[in-house]
Image 1 (cartoon, rainbow, N blue to C red):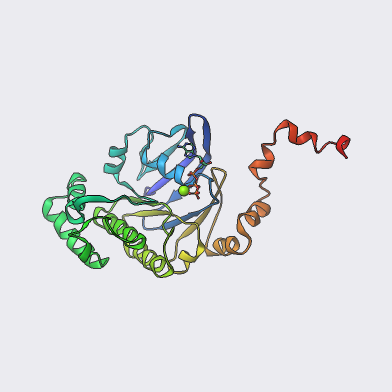
Image 2 (cartoon, rainbow, N blue to C red):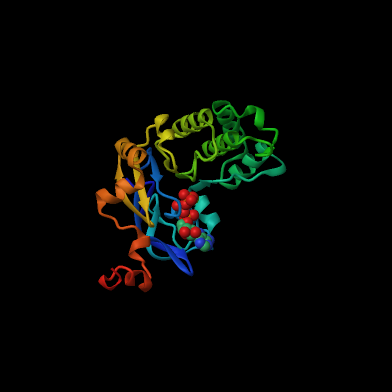
Length: 266
Ligand SMILES: Nc1ncnc2c1ncn2[C@@H]1O[C@H](COP(=O)(O)OP(=O)(O)OP(=O)(O)O)[C@@H](O)[C@H]1O
Ligand SMILES: [Mg+2]
């Protein structure tokens, strides 16, 4: 059986800078995986590259969604093939009611109008979104409500791969728990979920099948909850030291930096 998502040797970035340096990750159907990594390690870039944001260019590697190569395909085609991303900062769409918005998107994704309506009702009840259906998309919603709304939309659309960037940013402790529970609730044998988080606290309320650590544009380690515990205790420095990774800032010293380290300066 195909994997929901199989990324191999992905090298990508913006024209002036390579950000992903040969990244590999595999997410089987039915599983929820988490990526953790320091600021600037390339997590959001990975999401942009997977969804096909034209600001980023891919120079090597492959991205298979249920066995189909995504590299080279436009954004909307990737979405139709079953890749959906929720955003770090969900946007507000004043004047468009959530119900109509999700309906339009669902029909554009190939659902019949009846099926779309039925799913919207069912999932709204499941995620406690009924009272938001007739309000404008994301308008005047709190941060936690916006995230929940996005997960509700994913549950209606049922992508093969759900990408959730910065899933817990800006949320209070109760909202973190609710969003974590919603991600678990969305679990399905037909979907693989890749979520990006900064804090291991969200992992207290959910059970990701695997946790990946991303440093300098690569997945450097993967494991279970113990890996998150190690990060909580020792930060990324502990993982760097255990793996013998040199911080890029020291590896990329300018020639003048080295002069200060010569014996002549002592
Ligand atoms: N469009 C862009 N233009 C210029 N630099 C970019 C662009 N996108 C990403 N970068 C740079 O690439 C690096 C990785 O950025 P990215 O947003 O992927 O990091 P991140 O892991 O998501 O960080 P954070 O945890 O802060 O969200 C950063 O140094 C960032 O400044
Ligand atoms: Mg980011």
